[in-house]
Structures are given as C-alpha cells and as structure tokens.
Image 1: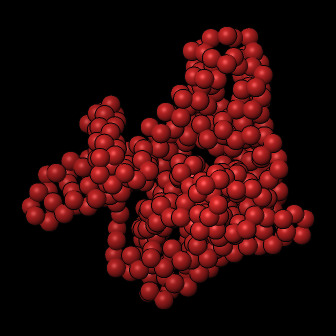
Image 2: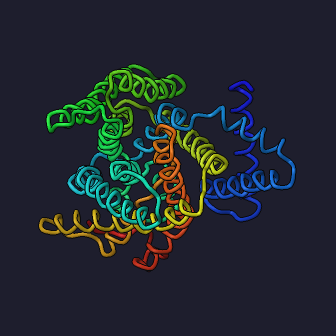
Image 3: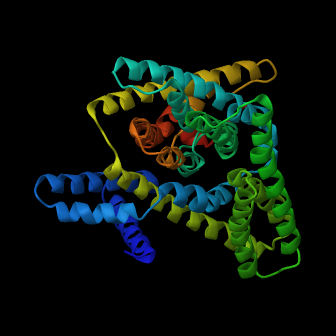
Length: 422
C-alpha cells in the first residue's frame, strides 16, 4: 500500500469520525475523534474473534505503514507547535517566565524520578520484571506535558489568562528538557553512555539553547523578509516554509526542533504580526494556521486511537497502567506544588493554581511516540501499555473535565469571562 493511500485512508477516517462526533456526542473535535477511533479499533479487533481476520489484517497493514514516532516528532509537530506559538504574546510569557522555566525544567526532572521510583515499586508488586533504569525512562517520557494535547484542549476550558499562559508556555518549552532527560536515560539503558555533568550540560546546550538560537535567527530573518512583501499569499507561504525549514535545520544540527519552531513562531506571532504584516495578511494568517492546527490535531488523535491495535495488554500491564495514572498525577502535583511554593515567596498566584496546573498537565501523542521509539522487548511492551493508558485517561478524562474544574474554582467565569491573577 502506497503512502498516499495510507494518508487518504486516515484522512477519510478523520473526516468521518469528525462527522459522527458532530452529529452524535458533540465532544471537542480532538477528543471526539480519538474516542470514536478507539471504539472503531476495538470493533476491528473484535472482528478477529468472530473469524473476520481479513479486516483486522488490512487494518494492521495500514497501521504498519505508519511510524508515529517519525510522523509526529519529525513531521506534524513542526506545524502544530508553530500554530500554537503564534498566539502567545511576549508580554504574557515574560510575566510568567520564572514559573514556566521552573515547571518545564526542574518540574520535569523531579517528576521523572518520582514516576520512575513509584513505577518500579508498582511493577515489582505486580511481578513484572523491569530494570529500574527503564522505569526512569518511562518517567522521562511521561513527565513533560504535551503541547499538542494541551493547546488543542485548553482553549475550550476557559482557564484564567495567567494560568492558561503558564500551562501553554510550559507545554511548548518543556519538550527540550524532556527529550534531553529521555535521551540520556535511553543511552544508559543501552550501556553505551558515559554520563557526566559535562556531557549533560553539552547535550542541554545543543538541544535547548541551540534550538532557541536557531529559532530566533530564522524567525528574525523571516520577519525581515515579511517587511518587504505585501501579499498575504506569499507571506503565508513564507510562514509555512519557516515552520518546516526551521524544524528540519535544528534537527539536522542536533538541536531541539520543537524549541526552535516555538521561538520562531513567537517572533512571527509578536514582532512579525505587529511590524511586518498588513491588516489583510493578519486576517488571513490566523484562519490558515487555525485550520492547519485543527486538521493535524484531528488526524493525530485518530492515530492515537487507532494505535490500540498494536498494544499488548496483558492483565499485569493493564493493572500497571491504571496504577500509573495515579503515579503520574501524584508526580505532576508534587512538581507543581514545589514550584508554586517556591514562587510564592516572590509573587502571588491565582486561587486553585495547583489544582488547575496539575489537572491541566495533559499527556498526549508525544509520549506515545517516544514509547514507540524504544527498542523491541518486554520493557517496551510494558512501558508502551502504561503510557497509552495514561494518555487516554489524560485526554478523555482530564481533557473533558478541566473546564468543569475551572468553573468550580472560578464560578464567576460563567458570566464574566476569564479570571485574573498571577
């Protein structure tokens, strides 16, 4: 089956699931299509039990032609992050810079060790033999909040502006430290790493700082180009090229593509929007990137739902995954509580900040993609199963109830719009 045929099948399924969601359950598009695609996948799996193996075989052929790790981390992510960064204001980001920095760095590291330690204890209690270092690997891939899931869902939750900036900003920037921790621990599992403080610093500089510098340079270059153009078609094409080219260049130079494209998007969304674009370009830019964001988000969440076909759900793995939900939430709460307790020495926070930041720290496709990138083996199977269960819970339960939690903490939002505070 050709790549075009696979993409065509996925787009048809995404459109159909979106149509069914709109006519029936009317959930937010990303959540609705994922839920329907999971039910669809389970239906196909059930067909195999009734002698209809051909349908299941064809479904596995389509999924076998998709490398979610490659498709997301080296493809779709560049567009999704750029679209998200376009709408974040420098002033809002600067006002929350220390909270975002601590949550996306120290918070990820603390969560990695809490998740790793507790997961090892749980798996040991379930008689699942997995080395402690692989539990830390699981902690590294599940600890960063997912920008795609967060940005796709948070806009429906009516979160107060200051908390929305914290959640969105953290999710956009914590991939850098998350990937650094993940890659270091992955090398340790292979027994090939000579990990020293110097090596960690070099990897961090290459990934995070290098990515930021590439994004800043590329964003500024495109900003200068846009100042000399007065055609919204050409300008939108240039922003599209920036999102792809910046990510690819950073990836080639072993820097963080996500951080590079986020910084480039911030430059264009702020400096470029206000000083280099006409009113007509601004009127067309936002609808274009919103549409790209909606299409790719829906497609990604359909893929997440379909991935249930390739999961190994032994009873012990299922139990571990359900317990891991609590572990991930506890680790998220601990990292958020520690960060906010420290920051409260210098500034005040909105009421309910810990609860909203904890419940709003969604996991999504990036965690699944990282788990799928692990070498085949028993460790991969259990990590993948736990990751998938956490992601499904995060999107379906946390994503659907975040708005209710916000309304409970801020009842005035129902009538007065967004709340205020730090």
